[in-house]
Image (cartoon, rainbow, N blue to C red; front, top):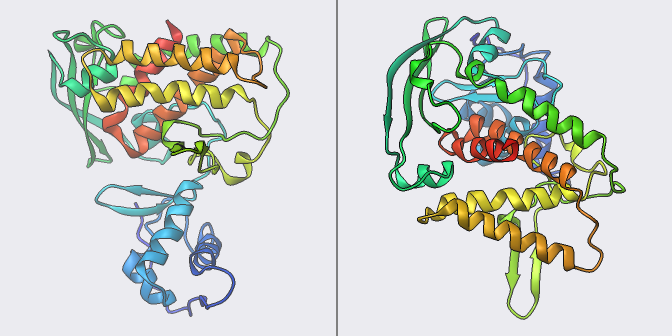
Length: 329
């Protein structure tokens, strides 16, 4: 990836005033993206930006965090922060490493270090919904772009999804091997489009167990109405389907089960979903939940989670992937 050349041009100033410094810096950096900084170029380090603009590294960090959430920048572990290229306009796009590198004009290769069946750790079993002694595929692969090591993938894959995975060519894209899910996903979405939709309204957008607080003698409080981090800010306030928040809460039970790593996390999560839906149906003002529409929204949430986890927390990827499989079952 290209490195930006040194420049002697005076830096735009960040001043004290009613506009927060991180917001001022974000606007300055945004102006540099696509002009001073071409796509996929490495931007200056936090320390360099801090010195150049006369702000603290905490201010720089917050400005960069916002630009990364807005997909104007992206990070590569151990390499730095880079300018994002043209955004792929698809909310339901699962891109493989191979396709992602090809889109960046790079050649992706893979070295398979290990592929074997084994009993996974307790937290992985909980995430995949496996029984105590059930085995899964343990696959370790080194991913390279233009011959440069980019990532070491350590993944567990359910044999219920791909029983013969170890017999496949794992030096190619695992995404391609599992791409048969896409047709099934499209079929679920198509069915939902034919169903009657409730009236659109402002929703939370990213409702899950971590967004609610039980206040002593005060009932429940819902917090953080910022919406899903990967979605552009302009999209987060657009009126949407109320059942989308129901779907978000249903998905969060799988995450809670994975964190708790109980002996039967899948059964626990299923009982929580059933209890939540029963309580929702009985609540004043609840809308009728169309099963086909709710299934599509739960699936859509799991697809979004897969993209988020692949980019930010690869160790958690089995949780949403198991959710996709459950929604397609």
